[in-house]
Image 1 (cartoon, rainbow, N blue to C red):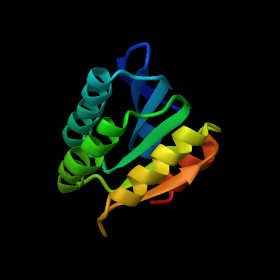
Image 2: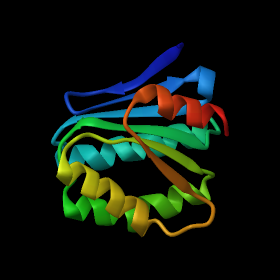
Image 3: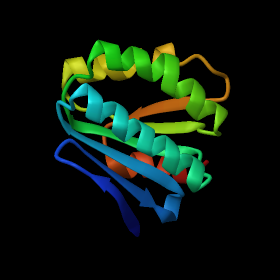
Image 4: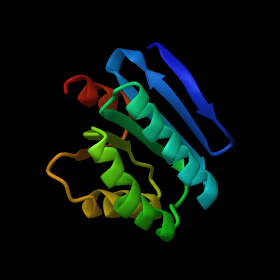
Length: 133
């Protein structure tokens, strides 16, 4: 699968997956709030710039998301992203109970009939789902 690296740090990597026309955001460990928000903002800029509406949020190696960042994500970032055309998020969940709880909380708190998030346990299923849209 062809992908282009957009951003990388010790806690996150963003790539563009041309075959499925989606961003792939991969988290690793606990991401400090400032970096978390920066990475999310870069993702939004890339969604807009590339005219994309799909993203993979790969949380398999992530640690818990700070509650303040969860609130910012659902109340600030998601409304802006949805207004910009973001429609589908394939979330790859980890075995961490805290991570799964954060993912479910964020998905539940984003109330919009224009947006849909689906949880997966592996990358291939996530890609297949996004390819079908």
